[in-house]
Image 1 (spheres, one colour):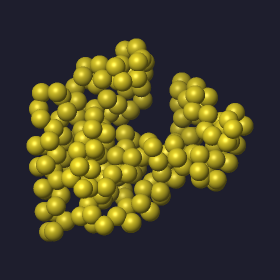
Image 2: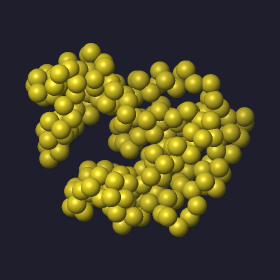
Image 3: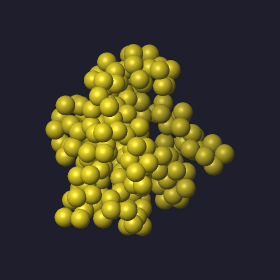
Image 4: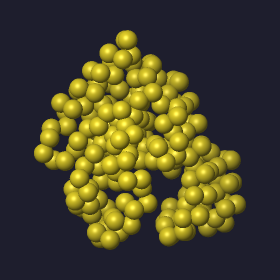
Length: 196
């Protein structure tokens, strides 16, 4: 079975593309959702997060996401420390999940595939590209935040052009080109590779 990643910058439409693959019967691991789950359920990870950020990191036994976000948002060192705990746990969890899949290929959807080193465990990576203006508008509408807040988030991610160059396939989600034919073309290529 092939292990495939889907990545792209904030607002590129990674999840939308991943859902199309799911309709084709391809299992998808959503790294952000898994990271949130692991930070609540993985006892070792919980302890590490509490040691780093204090007892306020959890409220009534659940991750205090607002507190944690405030701690790391403008503090690159704290963010790097949090990522150094969460990324390995998520990568290990994704690897276990991948081993249980029986489809011709399975997908890991994650914004930070290259930044976290997760590409080392993947056979192919699909990039989802959208122009900056489209991404800004989408995130502003989705999250109800200002343009400046979107830009601050974008500036924390690897440059989109560089990210797309690192990918094996690129799907353009610019509201001009149809997504489904692009997904079907990549799906066909991956099935052929798997049968290869």
